[in-house]
Amino acid sequence: MLLNALNTPLSRTLLIFSLMCLVIALLAILLAPLLIPIIISFALYAVLEPIAEIFERHGLSRNAASLSVLLILVTLAALSVSLLLPHLSSQLSSLQSQLPIVWQSITEMGNDISLQIVSSLGIAIDSNGITQHFFEQANTWGKSALIEASNILINVSILLVLVPIFTFFLVRDYRAFRNHLLDMLPNSVFEQTWLIYHRVAHQLQEYIRGIMIQSIIMSIITTIGFYAIGLDSPFLLGLIAGMLNLIPYVGPLMAMVLPVLLALGHVPIELWLVGSAIMVILIAQIIDNVFVIPSVIANAVNLHPLVVITGILIFGNLFGFIGMVVAIPVISTANIIYNGLHQSIKTRHSLKKHNLAESV
Amino acid sequence: MSSQHPLWHNLFRRKVDRISEVTEMWMETPLFEKISKRECRELVKTMHPRQYKKGEMVFNSGDIGASIVLIRNGAIEIKAAEKLLAELFAGDFFGEVALIIDEPRTADAMATEDSELIFFLRSDLEEWVKRSPKSGAQFMLNIATVLAARLRHTNILLSLQSN
Figure 1: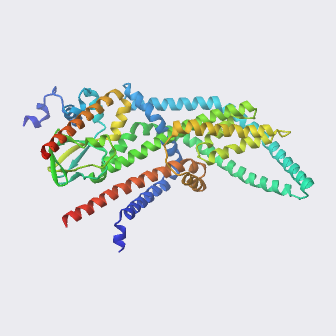
Figure 2 (figure 1 turned 135 degrees about the vertical axis):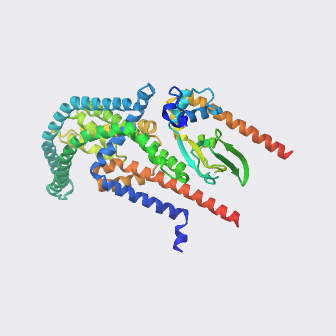
């Protein structure tokens, strides 16, 4: 009975798929300290591989092409750090000095609103309690953000060493390594596995390239917008908005929080500035949804919005910011692998049944 | 004796390696007509050689195909509904429809001798077309010609059968 149940295509697909997930999860646990540099290196590989190909087409060897690509990467990184870092740090320190004023003006605004409600409706609201609760919450978030930031600083130095090395070897050897690994497969599954691999690789490359371009475009639009409305630290806010845009659906909402808080921090409160900050994000989102996503990301992932949001929340809860960013590629990869496996097992199952029927 | 001893080797004779041999084989097929040998050789480097035992299935009808196959050595039998369609030998190729469409195979292919087959995957073809659009277009035209010739041949056979 149990054996019969295990013999259906669906149960066999589920069994093989679960085993694969288990192996991948074990590998992820084993490689946990290196997971972030590996993910970043793969993302860079997806972007840099076409450039290495162009170099190769112009007569460079794979070694020379990989080295050239690495040099471009390091030069660009060094240039952007030397150009942007002083600007970024000055904006960061001005943001730090502004935060107490922001909290104070929010408290005052809360008190004003509660006084107005008391005078007009006669209902007493404990605004101090609400703001206190808000501050405590903000304090907890702030502390965890600070801890995460200090962790990031420690990790950044490791990343600066590991990522270029990983990326160089990926650009140089990944294809040969992949071919060697896939050529070790038995004849019966060789073509199918290649097909599934190609679909996954193609979709991931399209998604990573798309989302990086989208993030840069969003950073530029929001920076220009924040600068135009006169908000402080426009460059830093634009950069954060662009980075948060890596998280579908949830990211744009998160991107609104800091500019709105900063706009609220102006003394006296300028409501038009708050409205303008929200408008900048909304306009950027409209441009993103109407022009950028259809032309850049298009059908890179074909998932239901509910699956996307649930996935982001679960991955975010488990792995933090990085989890939220990698949620979509991971879910869409699992989706392709499952469908490819199921299709292949179903075909073989029906073929076996057909052969059996013919032999009877 | 002399051929086994390195001292007696002709130092100036070109060593025929697998890539050169497979390139020559592909160049003799209509698929690489008007395409340079250099490009073909580069493409051959991305192809996948695989060994099959006598009686082993290469693919079954209904399997999703992803490549065209060249026989480097050995022999392959193509069957559909238990009817023998073709017997193929070294230098012949089969499964070209899978290079164009993502559809199930329409026939069974089985090795009738120990064989070495060279798989040219659709994914590698797509990458090559992106890299070299001009040669890629020529290759597609050549495939279309081969498929049209096969269609014409099938039509003639069908009309002969109905007559």
